[in-house]
Figure 1: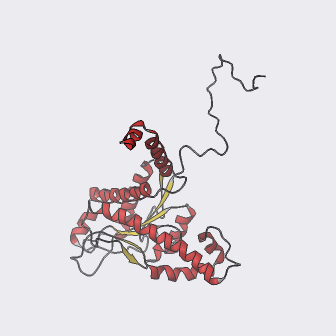
Figure 2: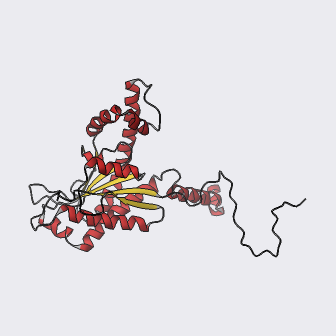
Figure 3: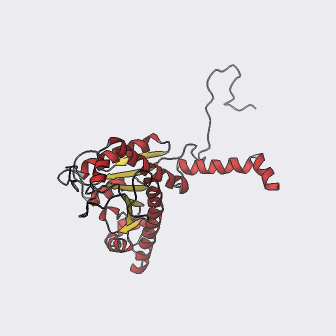
Length: 284
């Protein structure tokens, strides 16, 4: 007989699309970016000659960056601090991990002794910094298991455990470099670039072993020209936009599985594969 759920033609009820339980989501999940404004509270960071505090300008740039990310479909920002207070480095990392961040961007505007040094630079964790951190993580097997994709390390030989964590970290550093290169490239539009390559250093805030992380030195507050730039609202907005463009490009090029970026990429592939023009072009 007819199925019990047959809808009579006169029914005005809107038809609901029924999806199989295993059907992939159509929208994809958001990629989460942790934005970390350096310093804060009793720690002003560097102070420019005209009295500009690093903690203030980097919070403003970070908020603008978060706002720009939140306007973008498929992306969401989480600020490690959204006001003038101090956070330890490990608390910043903890907040990023708790939010499920897939990228960590720490925003700074440093000082050096030489006032003629200016421009932007981008840092990722050095291998030396990673190996120091690795021993910390291996001391806490439960945390280390997170890095190894949930594999229990309790019954593993210490060398194998170490290799598993090392692989997770190496993958993270590799991804960090790729993301940092995108950001450095787009920062060139706004400010001169101090170092043309991504730099590596042992900054503690970069030591999250499972989140690609970068530290962006937007400008040198110790340079009078850079300090002036940091005090112009439109320039801070341009710096935030440039960081955003680099971050977005990274996710377009390397979309996390299940994200909206990945679904859009796969849809693009499907369309290309079935377009008759493409098929015809293939025969030429």
